Image 1 (tube, rainbow, N blue to C red):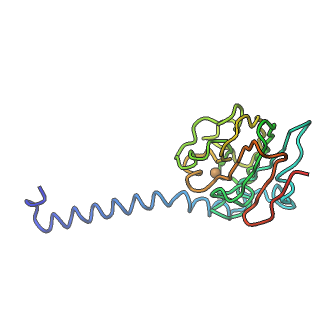
Image 2: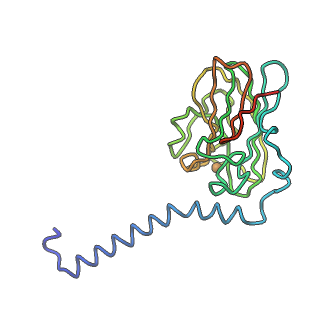
Length: 203
Ligand SMILES: [Cu+2]
């Protein structure tokens, strides 16, 4: 087919293809740009972030073998706001002993929708997160997300394994909006590792 095209027609189809590809690239980049813009806007509820300390991320829960975790989306501008407590791409690691009750408070101080759902670790590479790994281990409607809101959920870490607290808003997890969750048989108390900082153990 191409063999019968005039040089001019060939050039035209090449330019068309090039512009089509450029458009696709721009479309792919658009969400990241929107995040950066939205984060810089005044819409962020700073009062939900200011004064929060790393020890607030890991607290004793109600009763025996219960832990309370705090996950704040857009805590910093890191990864265009697609972070929990300032960390993305699994660089913060929550570890919980098998069988413990986990109460999560999810906070999104940003006008950009985010959510939180526990998934098996390999799922963070998907565009959509699907079902939660444990019963109740998600905010309501994680694919829709919430903006300028808080939400809590509770689940039992019933089976040892490698999981993630992922943002369920489409494309966010694959863009790095997740932190790691390990459920471990060999652990006595929950711990939290934030990047390269010292390992925190539940007091
Ligand atoms: Cu998100």
